[in-house]
Every structure is written in C-alpha cells, then in structure tokens.
Image (tube, rainbow, N blue to C red):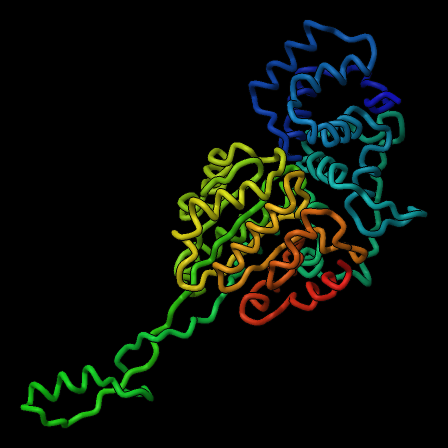
Length: 418
C-alpha cells in the first residue's frame, strides 16, 4: 500500500503560497519547518516537477522530514491540507467530542489531532476552501457538549502521549503551577527556641560561666529541620520522549519553587549515557532551560541502557547528591536491552543510599499491566513506591507518595505476580 494519501492535488495550486502555508501548519503541529526548509521545498518542487501526487508527497517529505517519528504527522497534515474534499468536517471530527450527523465516534490518534489543530489555527485567513465544488453556503456544525467534563478536569486525566499541541501548551501551564512539598527529616541537631522541650545544656552552662557559675535561666532548644535533596533520574529514550518532556517541565517548576522545602533538586537524564542537567533547570525561563538541557543530552530519543547509566550514577554522582536522606525519582518504563542482573544490583544500591526510591512508570496506566519484561522484574523489588506518571493527575499524587506510602500497594500487587 502506498504511504501517501490517495487525494487529488488542487487544480490551481499556487505552489509558493500553498507550500508556505503547509510549512506553517507543520510547524504548528510540532515539526521543525523553518524558512530555510520552505525555500528548499519550493526549489525542489520547481526542479523535480511532478506528474502524480506521489512525486509531490515524497519531494516535500524529503525537504521537511528528517526523523522517522515525524512521518505520521506529516502524512496527516498533507492529507488534510492538499484539498481533502471534506477538509473542515474531517478536522472537526478529530477535535470535537460529539457532532450531529456523525453516526460513529472515531478516536483520533495523536498525529491526527496535532495535524487538525495545526490546520485549524488561522483557518479563516489562510486555509483552502473546504468544498470548492459545492454551494457556498456556510456549513453549520452543532456540538453536543452535554455530559462532558470541564476542560481542565479532562486535561488532568488525559495521557500526555494523546495530547494535541494546544493541550500540551495548556498542560505545561498547569504543570508550572504544581508544587511538590516535602516534610523535614528528624535531626539530632538543635536550634535555640523559647518554646522548645529539650534543655540546651551547652548554652545554659555557657551563660552560667559568665555569672560565676550561677544558673539564672534554663535555655531550651528544638530540633533543627533537615531538608532532603530530590534526585531525579529521567529516561529520555524514544519510548519515553513525550513523557520525559512533560515531567521535566514539572521538575523545572519544583526546582524553582522555594516553598517546597527541598534542599536541592538534582536532575539527570539517561538513554545511552548519563547527563547531569541540574544547572540547566536552575534557569528561570522553562523553554530556555529545557532547550539547554536538550543540547546537553545528545542521546534524546535514542536507545536505552538503563543498567550502565545507573552504574555510572552510582560511581560518579551518588556520594555527591545523595546526602541528607535524599528522595530519588526514577522515571523510566523499565524496557532495557542490557544486563538485567546489573540493573537489579545498581537499583538496589540506589535504594540503600536513599531515604526513598520512587519509580514513575507511564506503563502503569494500563489496567492489564504486568511485570513481564526483564528490566521491570529487575527494578521492581528494589523500589519503595511504584507510581504512574502519564498525566497531570498522576504527578499530583507524587506528593502523597513522597510524604506517606502512596503507590506502595501497587508495588505489592505486582510483586505477587512475579
């Protein structure tokens, strides 16, 4: 079956204008389609020419696509833009919950949603006509919005991978408002306090020595709060890329929120190698921070070697960042092709060095999830809490998992299946 859509090209396409708008739609859908690529595409079409829609499709794709995961979005934008006879109806069907006249609801995949949102953006100004051969009457689309959740509540429970471009932007704004408060640890060190319950013998005796041994006042003290470090090990391999981006947005908010109580937030990414991005998260602007982190972590959307990366962390970084009862967040799906025995040993070493090890795994969103992969079976016995991390709601539950034992029951259930 051919990979390009089975659609007719416009009779009078006005190539320069249409290719420019097509590139704008690709950019809105999240693809890197800058002015340089637009010029390359126009020159390529003029040089190569085309006698069929497949020639046109592959010429444009060669200019705009350099990653395999972008092909699906490109194909959907191409299908919708290059004069699908039911242009508007197809896009509205992908975005709206219920439409009159639609007999059967069809669930759109993420690439279709992003393509539809990209083309609806500015459609009144730039989009081609929906039905060039039909009457010019306006098409009225009635939407039945009854029995639907509020947009914010729906967005909280929506899977990050199923979000469109506008939903991702709104989700990032919601994540920037989240916090991750932590309770202080019990400390043997004390600090002066008039309301303390423990006698500060050192200060009391020191004051008495200044009065020839006469004790006139009993000084008191209370425990000094000890704030733990938050250490995050985030998987940025191909299977985790969308979840990792959203979780890193959340971690940027935590790292720059002074009221949560963490001593420091240390962040590391790993795919085929370990990268320390702590200093990048300290940047106040989230887009600038994550762009710098992406440049630093050059194995983004690559393979996965969890065991060797955790071994590198234990060897080079554990003693530096795991002091003061650190809480460790391990963000990964556990799908590792390396040595599972080494993965188990290194995970156990992290658990023994930390106050609590919390595993955030997006695969836990599936009701039928079972620990069948060797990597998952190696990690699971060594974590204190097993937590989903596929939505805003699941990240909101992290505070409970850190303070109490939220997610421990899920670990117990899966341990019984081993």
